[in-house]
Length: 240
Image 1: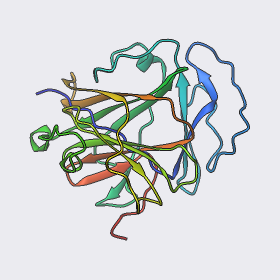
Image 2: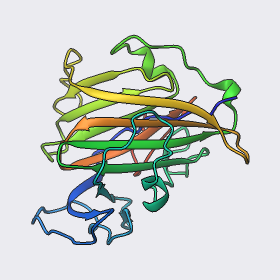
Image 3: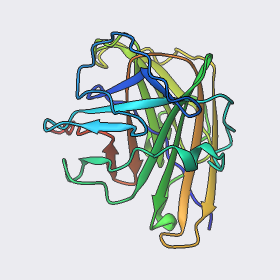
C-alpha cells in the first residue's frame, strides 16, 4: 500500500521564527529584534528548541528555490535540513509521545512559506480518508494534518489550514481563541499529498507539502491519526 502524509496544525504554545533566519545556502543570521514568547531560537543548523515548561520554538529555513508541492518530499533540501519530530499527544494520553512518527519542515522564500510533513502509519488499513469537499468538517474526522498561523502573535487570533491524504482543503480565520471563527474565509494556498511505501516498517507514509503566501510569527503542528491527536508542543486536552 502507499504511504500517507498528514497535515500539521499550529498551536499557540509554539513560537515560529522566520527571523533570525538561517538560509540553507547561507549561514548568515539576521537579528530582527522580535521577542520570542518561548525558548530562544535554535542555533543553525538546529530547527527546534524546547524548555522545561514544554514550550517550543521552531526555526524556518530560507530556501533559494521553491520546493515541489506534490507531497513526495524528495527535494534535496529534505536531506540537508533536519526535521521537527517528537510530537506530543493531546488525546488520548495527554503529554505522552505520539505513537506514530511525524516529521515536519518549515521553509520560506521572499514570497511564500512552505510546510511539509512526513507521517508514518503502522496500520494503514485503519485509515479513514474519504472527504474532498472544500471546507467540509468531515476533513477533521479523516486522517489529517493541520497548520495554524498566529500572525498577530497575540495567541488569540490567526488562520487555520487543514488537509488530509487526498489533498482536501479546509481553512478559516480564527478569532478570540476560537470563539468567533470565520468558516467562510478562504485564501490562496496549494497542497500536494502523496502515499508511498518505505523499504522498512512501518510500511506506509503519508507525505504532504503546503505552499502559503508568507505570514509571520508563531505556529505549531498537530496531527490526527485515528483517535489520537498529537502536536509539536504539549497541548491541554479539550476535555480537561
